[in-house]
Image (cartoon, rainbow, N blue to C red):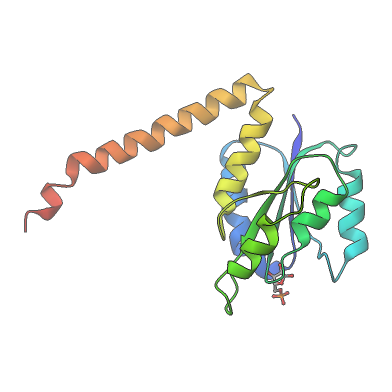
Length: 164
Ligand code: RP5
């Protein structure tokens, strides 16, 4: 199975990455995590991205905050699908990173999830791998069914929670 590569711009992004890692662990899918910054360690970020396909990766996740150019920089050096995760910062609550990540000019796509959306980034990566992996697709479907059952359980109990 192809690996999922996760890059964060700083270890201060780790809480967001943990959400992705928790999902990937629950699906037992191989992954690798790195701290590479588009501006502080541009060579390392570039080298990782350029060699990602030959190193067995199938999808890359890139998380960064503020003027978040990491996902775009990663995408510039690979034709693997890249999922950008804008991370919240204090000044603009993540709007800065959201716009920086999502507004890629034509030619170099970055699929962008919600601000701090580590879990959805991992799920989207799994869905991409599941295009050619029936067993993984079945696991994703089973998760959808578990999630739906949990909502229906809430529905069944909601009136009694309002009785007082
Ligand atoms: C970005 O700047 C990182 O992705 C992080 O979200 C933000 C702040 O980084 P630190 O100053 O906390 O290392 O490059």
